[in-house]
Every structure is written in C-alpha cells, then in structure tokens.
Length: 387
Ligand code: NDP
Image (cartoon, rainbow, N blue to C red; front, side):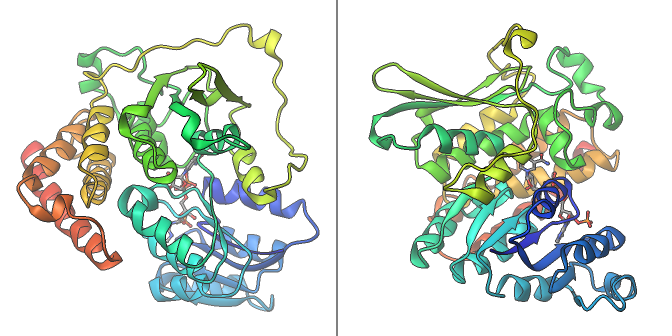
C-alpha cells in the first residue's frame, strides 16, 4: 500500500509512523513536517520515503543536509506540500495542525486517495466542500479523531436513518473542576497538563478550554450530516468511552478503548479490515467505574459557540476556527488570559453577523481562505482590546 503522511513529525504523525514502521507492505510516498527537520529526516530514512517536505522554505537546507546520501527527495514550502499531495498514493494521513492542513487534503482527495482525517479544521472550515470533493473523485474520508472514529465504528452495518442522537465524550481537561475565577487566572503551564491524552500543544490547550470539543461537535455535523439537535457532548473524565450512538429503539452503542490515538489511526489504516494493534487492552474490573457529567456552559463557553456555528453554517466554521487559532496564539504568547480566548472568538463571530458572507454556502476554497483572513484580522483587533 502506498502512503503519505502530512504532519508526520507531530503527535498524530508519530503515532502513524509507529504503526507504519511495524508493517512490511508499506511504500512511503511522502512525509511532511514543519520545523522539526531532524525528526522528519529520521522518519524518512526509517521508512525509505520517496519524498520529504518541510512547510518552511528556510528549513530546506537543513533538511537537505540531514537527508544527504539517503536517496530521499527533498522539497520545501507551501507549494511543495501541495505537490506532495498530488503524488499518486492509496492512503494519506492528514495530520497538519490548523487550517494549513486543508489544501493538501483536498489535493489528496482529487487523486482518489483515501484520506485519513485527523485535521478536524478541514471539516470545520470547509466541510461541505471537502465531502463534495471526496464524492466527486469517489475518494473516501475516514475519520481519525477518536470520537468520530468511534461513531463511524458504531454505525457499521446500521441504517443512518435509525440514528436518534450521537454523544461524543470530553475528558473535561485539566480544568474540569476549576471555578470560573480560577479559570480567569489559568496559566499556559496549567493548560498543557492533560490528564489522559498525550497530544500536540495546541490541541491540548483546546482540550482545556473545550474548544477541541467544540470543533468536534461541528466536525460531527459536517462528516455524518446529523442535525445539531442530534449531537451532544458529555464530560467523561476517564476517556474510555469515546462516543455513543443512540438509535430509535433506545439502544446506545458505545465505543470503548484505552486513550491511545493508534486505535483510531490503525482502524483507518486497516479499514475495512480490523488488524491487531499494539494498544493496551482494557481491564474493566480495574477501571471499576466510568462517570459522566454535563459540561458547564458558563465556564466553558466554547460549546455554546459551536452550537451557534452549527446553526449558522456557511463560512461561520472558518471564522470560528480562524478566531480560535488567533486566540490560541495570543494565549500562548501570554497576551490574553485563558477565558479571553472564548471572548475573542465570540466577539469575532458577532462582528461578522451582519456580513451576508458569513452564512452563504461555501463554494470555493478561495472564499474560505478569504473569510479566514478577514476573521484573523478582526480577531487580532479584538485581541488588542482584551490584552
Ligand atoms: P502537532 O502540533 O503535534 O503536529 C502538527 C504537525 O503539523 C507537525 O508535523 C508540524 O510540524 C506540522 N505543522 C505545523 N504547522 C504547519 C504548517 N503551517 N504547515 C505545514 N505543517 C505544519 O499536532 P497534533 O498531531 O496534535 O494534531 C494534528 C491534527 O490532528 C490537528 O488538527 C489536531 O486537531 C488533530 N488531532 C490530534 C489528536 C492528537 O491526539 N494529537 C487527536 C485528534 C485529532 P513540526 O512539528 O515539524 O513543526
């Protein structure tokens, strides 16, 4: 099987690399990364990749040096990323973080490749377009977010019309029990201490603010096509159940597994087979109890904002995501406080409510990019006020 991995040096990329390394039937067409060229070069050598691409032009020479004598072709820059996605491949992992992951995924679908989609921003910002592109090229998108992989698996053999509701779970992150006042003072160091999952820094902070769950609500709507009223989120601190699907006969099908992304990545890699995976097996007696609680909309406004976006649709997902990315940058830089991230996103959406583009159906990637840019500029202005 021919594979390419976009975002190979990240947390999802490393888990994918781990699974690929264990197989002997894989031809690695391309691996891409950002600034971590040393690791990208190691991975490319280990998998005998045809091509290694860094997203940054200034990283070209270091990558070239690190791969000297390896026979691995080297390229750099945004255009090179797109060109890598155009190389014929059977399976592509989309694991670049943020809106930058959108364009390579589109190109991979246009080649008819199966897109294993970890980059949730693709569905949040351009869901209808992405799904249409897959249909046009008879290409398949397989969800890699653990919740969506869980829903996908619970739906195997089921009639989608029989689905009443979908419940995705949230660990609640490190601030689950924190008061509103304490959240106002939450620091970066505290936000990156996730209780259950080991992930990239950005998604870890998004988990602490529940912005990650907010993106996932929108992702659920866009990927499966359920109505917003059918989609729920529940806090489940043990992160053992990843999602549940409720059917019209009242049955709830839950997907359980250890919090290890190799579950969902492996499922997408081996689909429609189920191959053995090197993940921990659950000891239910040792777990003893699984608990659930409703998310608090006051301390975690991200979920309320996601509901607004699910209703608005159009370009509101692109605005939501762009504002969230600016908010995250500002929080990481120490310019705004933890709860200001939600304020910033809400103010950005509010600023654009009277703009008819916000709710206009998405037609092209260019309009998505234009809304993304506009939202980032507005968000930066709001950030300056909040700082
Ligand atoms: P990481 O931050 O760990 O890795 C991101 C990857 O993208 C790295 O390879 C990084 O390169 C590369 N990258 C960063 N910026 C750019 C850019 N502008 N252009 C091209 N490449 C870039 O992220 P995660 O692996 O945690 O997450 C990746 C995606 O998967 C996100 O969309 C996330 O929401 C989603 N996801 C992640 C989960 C997880 O468990 N981590 C779970 C479910 C979904 P480098 O590091 O070399 O600079």
